[in-house]
Image 1 (cartoon, helix red, strand yellow):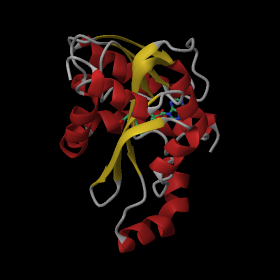
Image 2: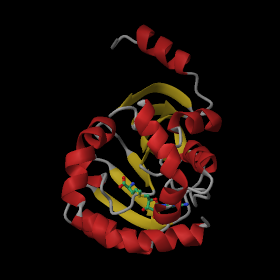
Image 3: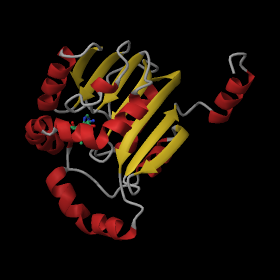
Image 4: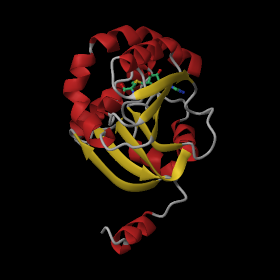
Amino acid sequence: MSLEEIREAYAECAPWMERLDWLDRRLTGRYRRELFGDASGQVLDVACGTGVNFPYLPSDVEVVGIDISPEMLARAQDRLEGLAVDGTVRRMDAQNLAFDDDSFDTVISSLSTCTFPEPVAALEEMDRVCKPGGQILLFEHGRSDVGPLARFQDWYADAHYATAGCRWNQEPLELVLQSGLSIREAETRALGIVTLVDARPSQESVVDTVRARLSSPEG
Ligand SMILES: C[S@@+](CC[C@H](N)C(=O)[O-])C[C@H]1O[C@@H](n2cnc3c(N)ncnc32)[C@H](O)[C@@H]1O
């Protein structure tokens, strides 16, 4: 799908995603809390949708949510108004972020790479705008580890993409590896469908980070 087709698809999704917010909290809230609960400083939420991650951020961060869909962003803006966290939303293509290099302390994104026409380009943009020493936290979904489920996902993948604009049998970790991000920790859950990634910018050696921690007086 082109970017315009994806934008149109999500314009239709926005009202029902808002109505099903309670279900999303039940199904995915624990992952969002676990991964984004320690975000710090200036936070960028890439493809923020209806702002579903915002309530899981610490109240002292400043968040910028970007998305290609004005309908999603209108709901994200409404959500921000009811929260303690400071923030703004902007319409933007994740594959071409209008921010300077090294702008954010934490870059987060959830359930997004499956929809980007060029997911590796979007991950490279997250890398570019993340400050040295910052973190890139991803909550993604993909192909199950369980054979029959994975085969069903493969069988239905084209139809699912045509209706939902979502590549549900992708391998999120392969995309992250292709983007060059330094993976600090990665884990799959929920029959392998959920992938949680804690990464650092590509220029950073994770080994150096570990050494620095071992030698720091704070431990
Ligand atoms: C499945 S929704 C996920 C929304 C939210 N992050 C969540 O966790 O519920 C995918 C989002 O990606 C957005 N999107 C798709 N392609 C995009 C792009 N190239 N740039 C910015 N946003 C994009 C859609 O508008 C939609 O809001």
